[in-house]
Length: 454
Image (cartoon, rainbow, N blue to C red; front, side, top):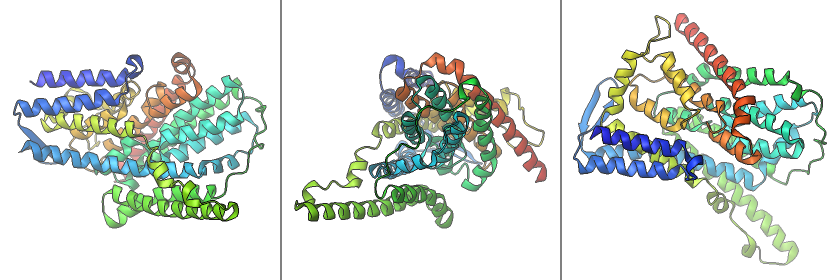
């Protein structure tokens, strides 16, 4: 039966990895794989376990284990839905138009540093996918040369993925590790911020010396419309509310989704107030009934959140949980730890080899990093804030940059700019690899210095 379960999981994985080949959204194989795995467990009356850190496997009833994993998954999904809704509310008020005011240079090299730095910072707050969409949209209005714009888009993908890796709210995988109590916000930033900076700064520096980024852009960057009223207010309020979530968790020790719901409530209240005020003024001056034309910004934003992504995360996380509940991931981790040589230092307290983590990062360029990190959480039973968790956060978050289809940011850039797979592999892939390795070396050096100091 274990062979059949693994086969179902592998086939589901292939369906996810080859979604562009089969032209089928990855949520379909993810949901199908989830349902089939749990059905096989139930029909065959297989014994299920809850993996308890420091203790190991403890047998439980199927319904209890299923509800346990569904609860853990729901924490992540509710958190993501709240964050997505806040981002859509910002967009409803055209808040991201505020970023255009930062673009005051015509130098191609300076513009590259500006866009990659903005991608790095924004992705740490609003996630790498949204940051990429926002910045490429602005880029299309500033850089008219298609070939040059492709280079900018490629470097934005690298920077956005690097920015999401060091923040507990910047990438789905880091959010998963944070909610699962594998990392704390402070320790994650301390260990991963500098490696992430290296990951985006080294490729940006190399690219800025290339011929394609010499000279100035031809278009007039200053010829932009004035941002709409309230756009700046909602932009800063939205970003500030998301940044408030880790503070709320630290102060109250409640799950992160509670802080995100509070932030959403505040942002939604302000959005409704501003929207009602706007339409009240409009109806008074035009003599029309404002209620008839008023559309709630909250309802509008909720209708635009990415439900396919939410359902994909539900499917893949619960599918991985099925294997975890059978103890298969736990057993596989033991084999992995004993067979792969440890490239770390002698005092490296974790049993997870650096080579395993680097391979996991490289694998995230081919296979979605969400299931890889979900599997890692189920496999490795090590303590909170162990260096290996920080290394996994870095590797899984940044490794996907090496292929255009290796990350959500890359896929959306591919769609927006019609980037060719092989063009990206030839022109950008090696830069992403250099940045990935530079950050990896930086992480190992920082980790060993901190361990020596301890």
